[in-house]
Length: 160
Figure (cartoon, rainbow, N blue to C red):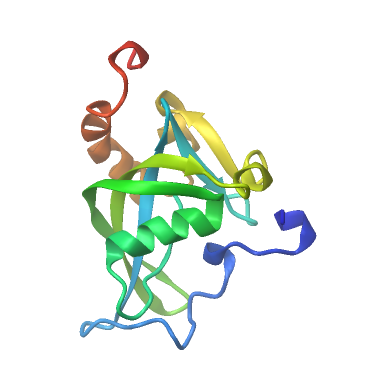
């Protein structure tokens, strides 16, 4: 169901849920992904109009890699596989500090939910335009660091 029908994606939910595990340092763990879809990148546009990569909370007992795959599925309707870990970043929101581990992923399959997200809250963006679309500097820094690694997975004819 599209956002216009009152469904909220997981990153639009309050991130202060009492079920979210907290690390020993008081950081709330999250996981996210740069999603490669053929030769394009999947970006989300939040209800607030922010351009971001899919991400969300890590469930108790769940690995960060598995959480990234789950969040991509929930937020876009795409099944992905993790190719490699890209690093992490932290941010503060509503008095809480979140630590996000990011992964480079490749689309394995588009589920029946994908058409409900495509063009609504998930968009296929040429890799050359991703940095200029991202709303936050920490995501732009992550993108610049990840770009050389991403090029390994793009088809050689598509890199120009």
